[in-house]
Amino acid sequence: MKTLNELPVAVLGAGPVGLAAAAHLLQRGLRPIIFERGVGVGANLETYRHVRLFSPWQYNIDKAARQRLECNGWQAPANDGLPTAGELLDSYLSPLSKLPELEGALKLRHTVVQITRQGFDKVKSRGRELAPFVLRVAGPDGERDYLARAVIDASGTWSNPNPLGAYGVAALGERELGDRIVYGMPDVAGTQRAQYAGRRTLVVGAGHSAAGTLLALAELAESVAGTSIVWATRGDQLARVFGGGEADGLPARGQLGLRLKALRDSCKLELHTNFRVTGLQQEASGIRVVGEHPDGQQDVISGVDRIVAATGARPNLELTREMRVRHDPWLESTDALAPLIDPNEHSCGTVRPHGHRELAHPEPGYFAVGAKSYGRAPNFLMATGYEQVRSVVASLVGDMAAADSVQLDLPETGVCNTRLAYDGEAKEDKGCCGGPAVDASAACCALDEAEKAKGQSGCSSLSACTPRPKASACCA
Ligand SMILES: Cc1cc2nc3c(=O)[nH]c(=O)nc-3n(C[C@H](O)[C@H](O)[C@H](O)COP(=O)(O)OP(=O)(O)OC[C@H]3O[C@@H](n4cnc5c(N)ncnc54)[C@H](O)[C@@H]3O)c2cc1C
Image (cartoon, rainbow, N blue to C red; front, side, top):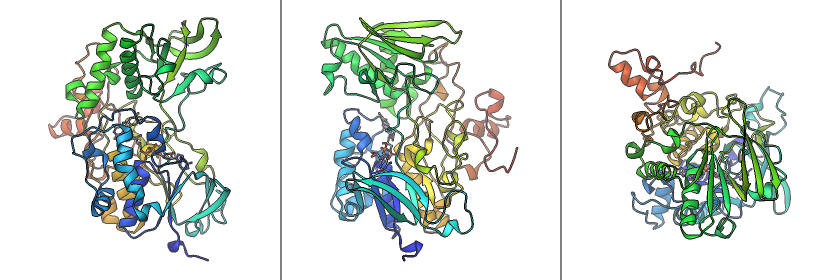
């Protein structure tokens, strides 16, 4: 029987963060085994390959992956270029996955369905940290169990979209009308154009995905008569999706918001704010979408041909049902990460540096990283995931100095700085985040730190931040 240290480290998902984890494992002399559900790497990115990303190449390439690729003659694209998701796949992830040491470790069309520990169910304690992980994996030849010394779960959230129903559960009729609903970012002006041209499409959501789809539909409407766009948002504060404009550290992200605001102002779309989707019904003229306003009044959007649900995504927690995991009750990230990314408090699109400590669960050796680490919180950036896996892998080899030295320099959305930019629309904007590593500062965020440095009492006095109790406290 193999000892724990002879086993590979299992990586779930061959997206940008899973592949980066594998590169870091190899750099540290550990053996990865990568399970990927899709027929190719980056299977989630593949579904939105037409979308131009808002972060330039400089933020999109992991350092360990770059080093490995460059040693094999690869030339990185120009730092300031903005790839589409497809270009990220074709020019970076695909060549990375073809390096022999990664290709040999990669199991495509292998879906991890459950993770546990050999000889232990969730209840049994003594000695569990010495037991290998067991991964039940569904592959082309059926189910098989694999053993691993540690698990890095980079399975993302994109394949687990939130429903249209505004209360977190499917709206009545949502399942029955599923053939008219697309979750995510369909290529409405390209490969799927025929389904949207000359039709009335409802986009539900108020994030970057909704913005991108609305702008693509507007482009389609310019060239195909009869194409009409309806936009429904759960709240009435659009400041976050309009973003920081010129103040955004990622100009393309700022432009996305500005273009959406211009589209809204142009009256080329029908906007329903405060529209909480509760039900869908089929009528002769199309889908009748029923919503509820905050005051309880009913509203209706009629004659809809297709619906794009850009309502976010959530992690698949079923995978770790038999593991000792502890999640924040509403974000479903770890407890320690939640206060740093809670969208109820933060809007600046960055996060304080964090690593293996904030990502650890009570189950030693299991880490959820990448988009999955954020649980239901939005605004995850690849660069965050790359630093997460660097820290996690360093901790796995016991290099705690490197594991604890977390550094992250992410561009902010500028929403914190522009609260007056869209007069009357920014009143919900309370947020800021970023700042130094948690261990290096007692401040809750960058604004807090700046205020304290000025001798003021911090951002809570500005009602800009409402820090939660520190997750490291043992009790209330
Ligand atoms: C439309 C859109 C635009 C974005 N633009 C940017 C941007 O400009 N810049 C930026 O930094 N970030 C951006 N992001 C956010 C984020 O960086 C990406 O979502 C990124 O792909 C996350 O990487 P990941 O590896 O964590 O997860 P994913 O890319 O989602 O990869 C997860 C992988 O795991 C696989 N998988 C899932 N479940 C299983 C399972 N059970 N077993 C095996 N495999 C499994 C999936 O098939 C997938 O390949 C964007 C996100 C979206 C949705």
